[in-house]
Image (cartoon, rainbow over the protein chains, first blue to last red):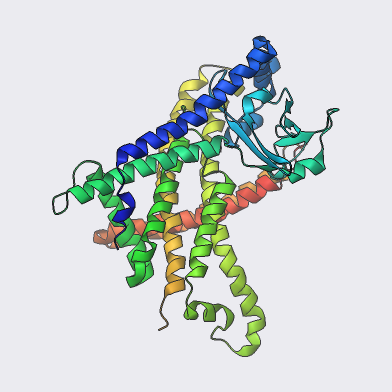
Length: 386
Length: 71
């Protein structure tokens, strides 16, 4: 199966394009945030807002709220908090019925100020403590505010939030890594045809061959070539996002695969691919199974639910595993702040290192399981009747 | 009473995971003891089964999160 024409462009052009892309999304919002504070003429307001942001997370009055801090690290955000008081404001992109809004989230000053955009005034609403995690998940973060400061729920419901949030920026980083690594490997294969693999090629070849021989071929059969791009992409995308999520410092630390929206989309891909490629045998097992006719009343709903529940399980499995791992690590670090004693630190860090090694295993395992189950479902769809 | 019942629910879900994965691990140990040459195959199958069982337990934890009513 020859996909090599995909990589005919030079890697250099790719690097230049994505450097430009990343620069656009980092320099421009920082510049926008700078000009805003200059216009407002109160730079100290930003510092006060940062201090207030710290207070919001529960550091004020010596009272440490671990739940709030952990949820803040797990959740997506319009600001990428790098270290201490230094955060990266990320672009906010809103599609309103009146038109498109594009501005830096720095204008919100961590939720302290409303921002008057081209069409509406907006306020950033952090998650509220009097609602459960589930309800908070469905609340919009950026709300439309009427001129006299009240939140306008009807207008808020009509805007669509396409912002580059922390998770989106982290996904872009993963995409850049994947494209760079795999276009390098592909061009290496082209140049070194007939010769033994070298360098990055020889590092990735066992993994790619593993996906092909142990995941794709046994489950899909002779037609596996059609689905290899999808399976490889899913495997490496999940793997790199899992691994980056474990890194505590800047480009890492964004909880991408622990965001149920991301895993929902990945599972949606599996659902679509499986059902679009379903052959007559697959559909007849669902709608005309080999049972007495009177059992169809039970069997058909069960089978239809089965079609949906399998990708649903994929989604929840990946989300819960990764999020649970992050919560455990964050809780162990929070122990230091709860006990307010440096003596806890060695114990806590030792536990965290142990959990991180376990999380490393989980990162690989979850990527493998997602890919394996996707291959299994695809195999069930394209299997010939025997 | 302090705390929430959601946490108790999560704990019960974890009991199920512990039992299930413990069973799988135990049988895997027996299998490896009987036939050490098959150790790597048995280990792979054990890891896969453990990950699937853990998935189910984590459904329980996710439901606990969703059903948690903060005071």
